[in-house]
Image: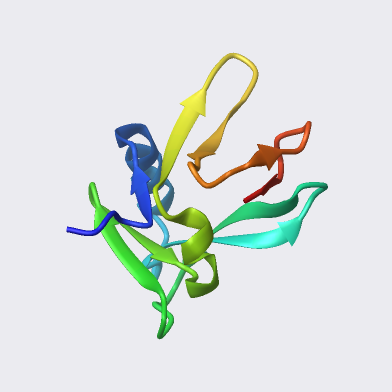
Length: 110
């Protein structure tokens, strides 16, 4: 079986299910990358109300992830997690394709 483009941890799945629970018409979370920051690329996430024709669809742990086809090569093997501590909370991407990140951690390059 081929490696999925993106895996999600239990914590990420719990958080995503909670975010989507009361959103009518949402069919999943669309994940992609965009040009941004000083290192070149940044992860994007948004609630999706439809599945685009060429989206990669991953259903895992009760969550549907839709991956923008332009982002597939940048995301293969990535794990998405949800982390919380006393100062911050947010989704974290652990991407084996990353070659570096900017100092603030907002963007990366492959």
